[in-house]
Structures are given as structure tokens and as C-alpha cells.
Image 1: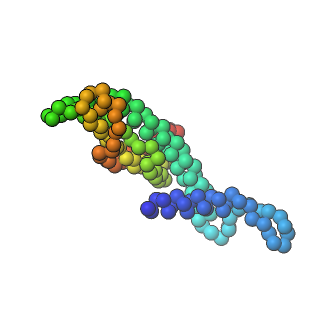
Image 2: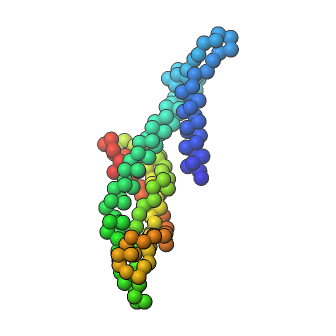
Length: 166
């Protein structure tokens, strides 16, 4: 919840900074110049919007990386749909099971670090689902209706190093 509120705040902040504001007296538009913020403020306070803008860009970059990573995980999983596990149960019926990382369930969080080698870390939380079908024959269970029988949360931490997520 906290990261969603933070992302929403960052998006609103970026939208406010990018939309020009009109002066009532002059009828002209002006934009906020981060470098020319208030000279009385400390340097860290003046640079804060720039840091948040970088963080928003890195979050978008990490979301694109996460989508590609989920597709790769689904292709290469030991028990993916193309390599599902089919076994005969003691009662004579057949059961087929496969695993899949659910798309659009991932949650991503990016944090800025003080390290020069690893300036950002990204945390991806995604849901692994186990699907199962039971039928009287082996072929019917492979092509039958599958239902979700298990959901597992997975937490993966990546580091941004040398221009890419690892």
C-alpha cells in the first residue's frame, strides 16, 4: 500500500512539474526550473524534484524489465504449460499440472541507493499459480479445463548496475 501511494504521489508531482502554469497578470506560461529553485534553500532540497523524476524514470524502466522477465520465467519454467506434469492417480484418473507466473499481478518498487556501483535496487513481487486438470484419460486431462489450485507469492530483488537490471 505504501509503495502505491508513493508511486501515485511521484506521478502527481511529475505531472505538476511538467504542466505549465499561467500567470494571472501576464497571461504567459512559466515552467519550474529545478536549478533556479529558491537560492535560500539547501542544495539537497532544490535537487529533490530532479531525484524524484529520475526515480519515476527508473520505475518505468524496471516495469518494462519485469514484464520481459515474467515472459522469460513462463517460457523456461520446469513445469510450464508446454512441459506440464501428467501423472496417474491411485483411483485410475489422470492429473495434469503446470505452473505459470501471472501477468499483470506483479508489483514493482524501485529504491535509490547511495552506492555508485549500484545506484538503484528493484523489488518485484509476482504471483506463481499452479493449474490442475483431472480427467479419465491422459489426453483429456492435458486438453481439459484447468483451474487454479495454488497461489504462491515470489519476491525477487534486482540491482541496477552498468546500465541494466541484474
